[in-house]
Image (cartoon, rainbow, N blue to C red; front, top):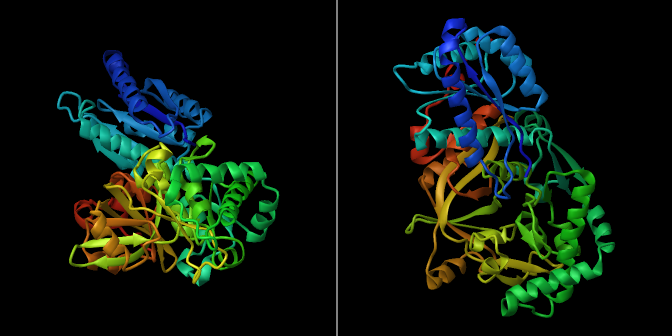
Length: 501
């Protein structure tokens, strides 16, 4: 899992006699924060960002420059400026101008009457904001779990922001069926997220499918057959060993091109060319987004159905925020007002991980069926993947544009479990052969419908609302947070003050 180095420094007083008395104490606090972050900020695959500590306090100009140079040479892309006592605020500038003034900055202080770090924080961070820097502030004691959780959320946001800068989105085939909300908007995407796209015709995938190793395809098919047993519903027409193998070939061809072109995440148009002349993309997209295939564990590769580009970027953000969890892509399909329940389903890329939230594919596939593709829509055939998402807390989100300005709708919620009879009854109202998330939102139907930007919604397991909000603030886009979390959100100063033209 890609990550970027994090820099930690401690700001201090300039007076030598003060530094002589507090240096050991301050460096101890700095090292303690580094230790805590190292213990708690881990990705799903066990990797973690490098933590680079400047092991002296910033108490004069030369030390500030030396710290900035050390962190810059170490490749630090985000910075925590710690405050444990009063400091001389101007020292922030030689530090940041040496490191890079566009570096995301968290100002982190104790809340202590004897050692007024928060006074130094407000004086120093206030100076940074005067110059237009979008900084964040956390004040609290190092042993406080709530303070630690805030720091980790900010670091997740900064990791998503900095790790995605320079990434390339592989756009297979262009936006599908004229869905303009899925179009890749080049300039806003480069400016806000630091990502660009390369469009590749789906014909390349079709040609690469011909060169895929037949034995590897067979191993993939046999893996599915062993996992699914009689839940793999071959019908002799739409879903056969041949059509399933075509889907596996498409997955392997896309994997090959992704590596060749250096794509960090991708989207597959599918409809209508592939779905009518080659195969349905559900299985390839599921495998891309999963943390495993028949060859063993792997990092999920975000792949958006119908090449929905803003869906893909949203999923990539959620993947980085969560430390590498699989993400979900769903249609905003049907609301049941009597249950206050959303049925979010589509013939698309629900990662099988969400069937049981397990990294053991056997546990997930025990709850999954492969059904024949619907001939009415998908004439080329293949398997549709069907399951009910396992219950648990979720963060749902979606990027959108208003008058060419990007924003993100964010809502906390949960996937809930229904009893089998009720699930079957409700699925019959949409499509029983597709995957479903029974979603309860911390937002009313009217609030959601009023502001949501598209027909596709994305999600990730866990509560990342605060981290995602901070990501938006770092990226310079407006977060539209729904429900109670939105009511509690404190808008940052840059949203409140309008510059004069």
